Length: 150
Image (cartoon, rainbow, N blue to C red):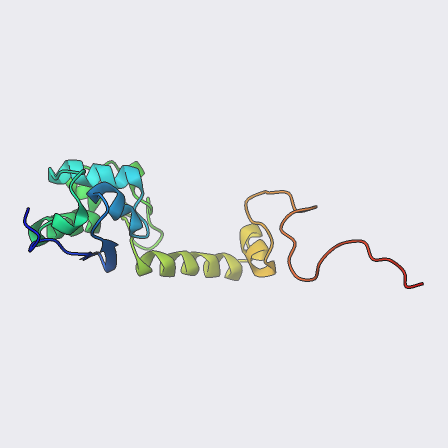
């Protein structure tokens, strides 16, 4: 590990990762990859999770990107992917980066169009997942008691 091979920024799956972080933690900076998936990817590819990201070779980065593209094909269980039985394709896929942001936005737009309960809550800007709203989640003007002018 010479200082010549060290990189401060490493690009993986369209995301710039910090070269000073350990491999397993640096992968979690990619949107759609959590620590468990990162460790599963490193286990499948037989890479050292404790190496600093800046010392990872381009071949190892390509291996990780291949597994990220289709983790189920490489033996990662289907319950770890973020799109099980995708509505469009019907298969188990894992989406990362800006594609994940676009698919979530598309899902919310679909809920709004079908006028589902969650879609209506999204459209009104209210809490969606059953949280209480009597006192929390207030937006806009300050709520409080005002004194009468004397």
